[in-house]
Length: 319
Image 1 (cartoon, rainbow, N blue to C red):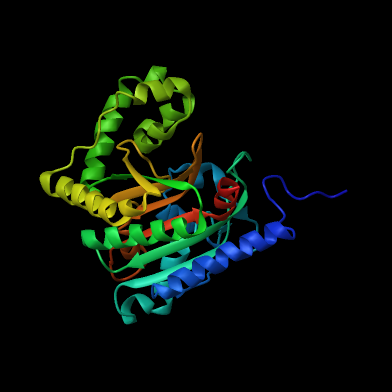
Image 2: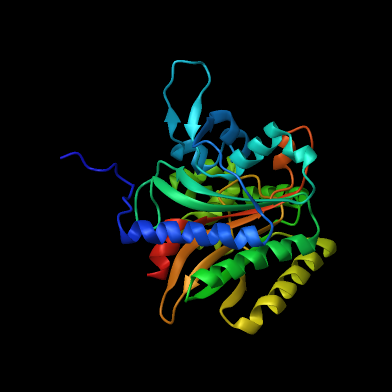
């Protein structure tokens, strides 16, 4: 008997209803917040993801589903939705013509060739949200609070919002140099994969699950923010806490070692987990600010912030 491909899932009856209901509630909630819907192809030029996600990320190096075709253009199934959304808005002229901010939502399947396990599938569904055109701290606050309110709407469990910041593109580059220097002195104690990551993408070492690497990362340097960046981050976190704390369902944790798996983040970054009295789920999604990505894919540069939430991860965590 032919079976479904490894790392995929069939949604049948109640599972289908759960997925459909989650997507409906997502679109209804953000329509009311004046977001517009967008749908993009499931495959794009491979170069789109190499340029945006990062050619040294695990996603591009090991997890990209490339398609065979007769033309010279190389295509790949999308591993995430943000890059496709920015490409579509640039190609349609919407980045120039629509009033700012441009707030959009989308949902659908994504694909990554990784080892299947709980919370990690080769085909998975994402809820995606992007706000393009504002760079002020209040836009970070408003965006994150909107996502918190949506998760509170769909989940009976408590929510943990882990949050950090790169400060700026310049600060992120300086931090990368600090990490490279620190890990280079301990290269022989790192796993084989992290030894390769030191010069190419030192942030990924912080995310390694190898016990020896995790021990070394405990003493890794933290990012050094200037006063303006530090005050912006502290004020943003404080304002978010004031807006969500009365409900008591969501708590905030500042995690200075947080790493997002995409190269384009430049400022605030965050992740969401669901928590009950005894256990904490893995991440159900996350995102951050990316102020250079639009300029890399279009003739104008606009700041932006976005988030992706995993449909299957949410369903599994709620159950």
